[in-house]
Length: 371
Image 1 (spheres, rainbow, N blue to C red):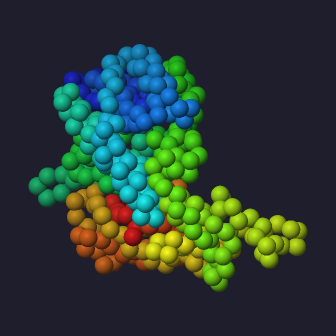
Image 2: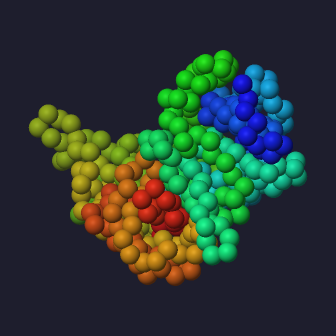
Image 3: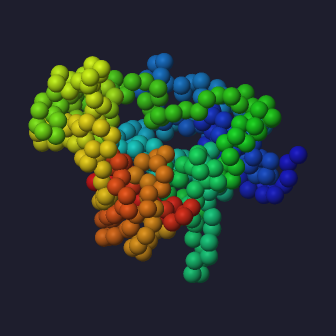
């Protein structure tokens, strides 16, 4: 039975066809909101390929809207996505860095283009199926909005949302931030959602499950060069520096290099440790804990603080990649252009192009792009 807690408040929910956004729509309707579903089409270069699930996702979203009892419309943001997210993605890879397009997609599409569209529909709020929380706190004469980790830390997605600003957070609801994923699945089954057992999507939205190098090959030229050990010995050939990331160990094509085999005939495990862009050389090292793979500090640029201003310098925690445990660090040299983090324990494979995100307990403060 619906409790009319929010009479006439209109929420536009980003419905992707997945279970998380579906349960989000149902929960908000239960709370008495007027809910409208919006399905975002962000990619259309290869709709017909086996890897692009847009058509099925739309059918799933429409079926869910029918069960939940809400209107849904599809909106095409493919042009904005190509312009604001994909172009940046290719630029970064061309420069030898490893970008995180999900971070940019949230800032530019889901909480900008989508938010703008929702406002034209008369929305008071937007909502998504992200695992995170928003909290308002008094600040001076008004209020400040904080971005918090989800209660279910195993599913927390605040890392991907760290570029959201005060205006965006003030309009955003994250109903799943308060409940564990197991409960989301349980609700979906209980209310008979047609996608209750659909598996979660993984990977970058426009790549899906396809082989990554094969996808990048369509947009970036291959430029082969040497794969070299720390001692300067050439042990292989790479396809182009764009196709490799720091810490990568699969797909290097150098297993069992002559002179490096162990007694049982197997080779050592090689990891990408450095890229020499001017020299088009890929450096690899043996072993997970090689000193070249460990960093005690990093610098970041293109910064974005949730509060609209930098936190005071001092001790915090940070993530340099999603799914990483918070690492104790100290924020220093913070300017409008960038900041430095110094870690208590060396961090593994800190990768230029990825996001360094700063936390104060459960509060996500923002972050920047590792340079």
